[in-house]
Amino acid sequence: MTPMRFLGKIVRLQIQPTRLKHGEGEGRVYSPEALMTAQKLALTGAGACSVAADGISTIDIHNSSHPNTRNHGANALSFAFTSHYSAMQARFGDHLGIGCAGENILIEAEQVISLKQVARGVAIETTQGRVALGNVIVATPCNSFSKYALRASSATPADVKEALQFLDQGMRGYYCQLAGDLPATVMLGDRVFAI
Image (cartoon, rainbow, N blue to C red; front, side, top):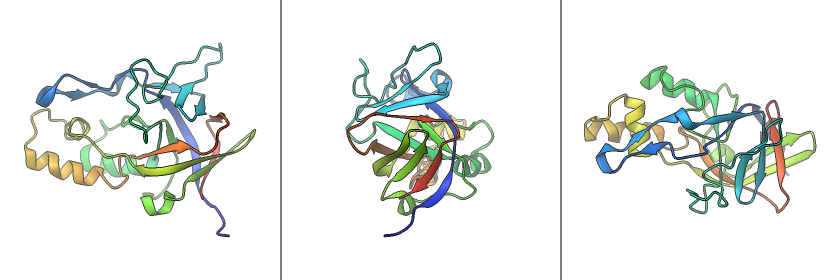
């Protein structure tokens, strides 16, 4: 059995209570303003919701129980790495703030993490035990996020294509699903390993 490889600690947890893309067609724009950070996230097979100190929780729009869900079956949960943001900022600029792509779990890492490195899933060590996330796939970037990265709502098709190619292959992050039936809670500082 291959030993698990340490990837990093969770440094940001967040949810999208509403859509981050607004408008229609070519006029659609991406805005990360609605993102809400959290100290804890409750994870279920349906997706994520924040766990606030006052007991109030907010459901992520990719959770299949959200009234306006954007869940398409494989995108209930998502994670990304700080190293990917460093690469995106080097390419596009500092306006691509940490977490702006909207992933639920952001993991501190020194190097870009490829799909091959996390394809078997990741395990998060929590105070209650280990939480496994599986069915990892690339979170394919969209035109709206690419134009946001370019800071150009009217970017040329060639510029958008080049941005899409750079942001693909996991640069923009990964979608995943909770492995198993039991709900779990993850917190800032939890350690994450490649399975």
